[in-house]
Length: 307
Image 1 (cartoon, rainbow, N blue to C red):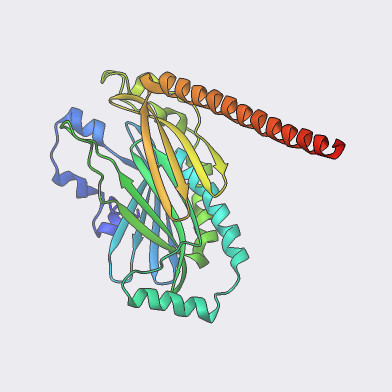
Image 2 (tube, rainbow, N blue to C red):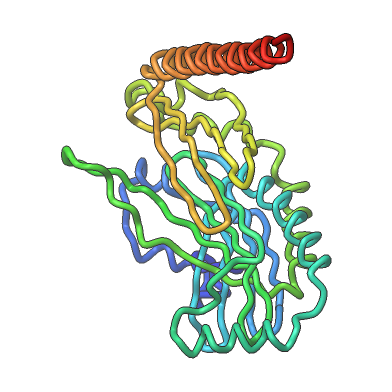
């Protein structure tokens, strides 16, 4: 037992769920089973990693409990947890290459904290979008040291004509000294309980709710491309409205994303291809004009020499 839904953190037993009386069918759908739990003590914080399972499949809950008892929680599918494990490896490698903080860096971090802005620039950042959830990973530094900040936001969607609202989100801060221990514990849970995650893509009850949900149990894998200092992530997801492609533009200090519904992919692709062809033709015409201009200048020079 570990996170906010389990007995050890709440201070009660499993019977804590019995306070809510549900109809048998609803109770069966919502019942959550805890499969495994791991506790990590890093500096003055406690971290709980719990693998759980409900009708939709398996997932991981991460809870951070601070020295004062404050709690923050993240929820990840097992597929996203596996991606987090890989990202943590990148952050561990980057952290190892940084070396100790210089006095100037510590002073700058302390000054930023006094101004109320906290650490202003991330030492390394990553960005992950999966369906209606966004995850921000930032390796930062303040006067207490370096840490990995992991923030999760959830787009709940809107019932009206306007865009859906974005939930305030949850954030945990993992001291950099505990990155390896945290990654190893996460990897062990994934190895032991992540094998059935293929079922998570479609969900358990999405087939009757329109084009999304269970009808799309298999979706294309996400990918990314790097251009100069930017990275572009392409992630396919589905919700009750159907399949969509989220394109995220990520820089060290900037993030932005657009969502394109499946029915518009062909039009978007056609527009990109058309502009690519037009720009290629424009560049070729410009090169031809440049060659002609250079050739004309050389001819004029030769005529002057003959005179």
